[in-house]
Amino acid sequence: MVLKSKSARVSLVCLESNGVDDTKALVAELCRYFYKLGWVLGTGGSITVKVHDESVPRSHPLIVMSPSGVQKERMVPEEMYVMSSDGFILSLPPLKPYPYPPPKCTDCAPLFMEVYEMCNAGAVIHGHGMEACLVTMVNPFSKEFRITHMEMTKGIQGHGYHDELVVPIIENTALEGELRESLTETIRAYPKTRAVLVRNHGVFIWGDSWISAKTQAECYHYLFNAAIKLHQLGLNWSSPNHGPNHSFNGGWGCGNIGRALDCMIDPSKRCILLNIEGTATPISFVTDILFAYVRNSIGEHLASTYDTEETQRDIILMRSQIQDDLEQGVGGALAIPPDYVGKDLVIASWLLMLKQ
Image (cartoon, rainbow, N blue to C red):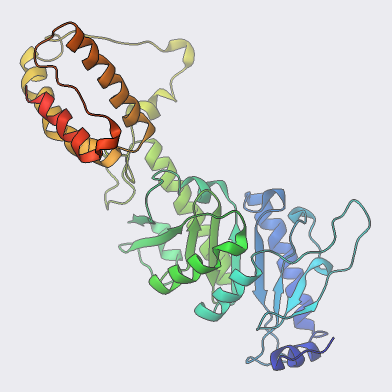
């Protein structure tokens, strides 16, 4: 094979260096370690590290990448790929007998190369940890994960305890290689970030060296996990005091303390406590406070949740109830128009009915 790339030709000469062997062994060790953490289960995830060796020119570094479709907990150095700085494969893993699959470089290779070039990274980690996946699902419309006033934030390069950590979120695709465009656009838009979350998928994390990438990955996953647990307790992780979140819009940090506490109660000791108007609070509280709150808030609520399954179900039920009222001659009943008239008219008719 003729290597047209100067980087590839220079790097090929350095393949037998001790630094290459050491880096292969390091990546295999990290794969096993991350498997135990749950970040690279089911052959998912991948790791890549630049070779640091005096015999390898800094202008043409060698890059070691883990393969695809390999059991990460059984990874050995011989299974690694070695690549030039411009993406040429210089060294292939040996072919193993059945049932081992043929060697295949990670599908993340093009994405890793973009991170190396754009961020001058020394190592990149792509993991499928549960916390990295779930934290993107709390608010399916959010484009960022934000958290502040957490000690582990100090483990992220360029951040202190009082700083707000912002991690951009991109949408998942059927194939990892298809994430390339959105990943590069996001890195340009967030030059300070050292990580990008992929919704319902996982996370890419990088650092100046493998030590920096590993340390930051551990801190990021800690913060993702903390945010999920704070959310379950109804606490707002994005505010400095992490106090109770009273938001009702389903956004970040929104939770339900009652639901969280309910999960901690012995099922055999659960009960439902009901009261009637005027028992715990005066009847006027319902008519003057709760009804007024609904009238003042329903428009904003409908506008922000209109396309959700729950709100659409509520609209269907309301239409059915109004139809029954109209048939029975109930005063003040106004029909809600069909969906094709548009969201704004449907909401406006609902608000008009409440004013009757």
